[in-house]
Image 1: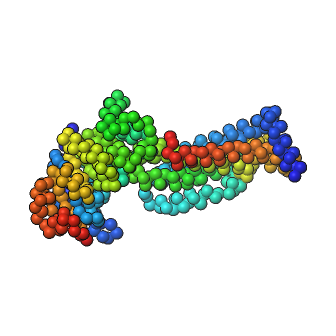
Image 2 (image 1 turned 30 degrees about the horizontal axis):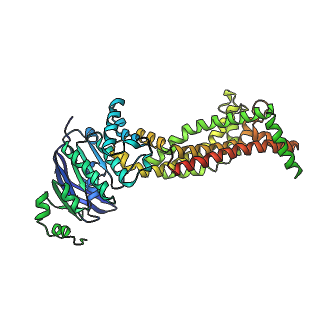
Image 3 (image 1 turned 180 degrees about the vertical axis):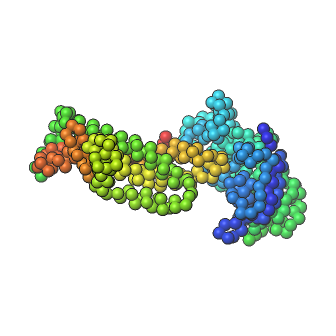
Length: 237
Length: 234
């Protein structure tokens, strides 16, 4: 498979109704690890994730991949803060991205069995996904994103509003995916979760990335006053 | 009041004895309506879904026209179809006037905007729910339309049943283009109009009760399907 990396955003900027929502941001995403993206509400985290994923149109700047652009999307996946589940059964939700990419019936069945076991929904495969709880829906959405073993996975606050058990199960999925070679970029408001998962971190404010660094250094000795204030729990505007 | 009781008695007698004329007229009503419904759905369901997901110039105008066409007067539709299919008209050579096919054409024109408009509204909501996911999965336009139609099928069934309800009760257009010819183009609504004109109110009411039964059945089915959608049953 052709590598998606390096993924580069050059002077990326998103403007809506004349107002700059994000940018200019320049960064490079390389092939391994888990990056957490932190920052106050309205900092532009979701917009940056969507811009990197290619579903947010850039007003200026350029997004580049290590592979041809027509192949880049198939190598990525995105998990949204509010899980989107298709009005289908659990099994059909897991099968959907596989069918889109022409995965054969036998392989589909094997993957569905495998992933439904990982998210503990094996006994509910035929049930409508709409009947699942919030945590189960997010696990299903995460499994659906991971079922094709993407090279790069974006998650936008995937455990916001979930209980501890669901959060832990999703974190386990993410650790396993990272260890399996999937590059992960995740926005989160949860400091403890960020410390638990992050290999490195980006801090955003007012649409720009103001600090980046490897995990222990970022959390223990941040260089910027805004980052320190944010990590201290101060309210930033 | 006596006419109503007589009508009810007549309807019961006609139904219980499976009156050949009633059966023939009812079956023709269903045949014409279901044919029109099938054709209208083939046009309206993809059209309504496409309008929900595709942004293009004058889209709002197209939707406004579609909504306005829901109120298309059937008599005017009948008149236009009559002119088009009459011997002097552009399609006169097809000899379709006063045939069930002409009635189907008129009904398709009447119910297509209704089904497309309801479909658009239902699909717009579903598209808002699915938008980010389907864009993220890099689905093509046809895949999006197919996904929305599949997952919104119960809403679409409701749209189709609304079209059925409108078509089965339609009289103005099919009277004009069908001609209400016995054993050929007579359907429940035109038969009711005829019997009323003849002064046979009992038979007219009897036919009317059969028609109401069909319409109520459709409405109950619509209601039941809507309930299953809300409750998330598959």
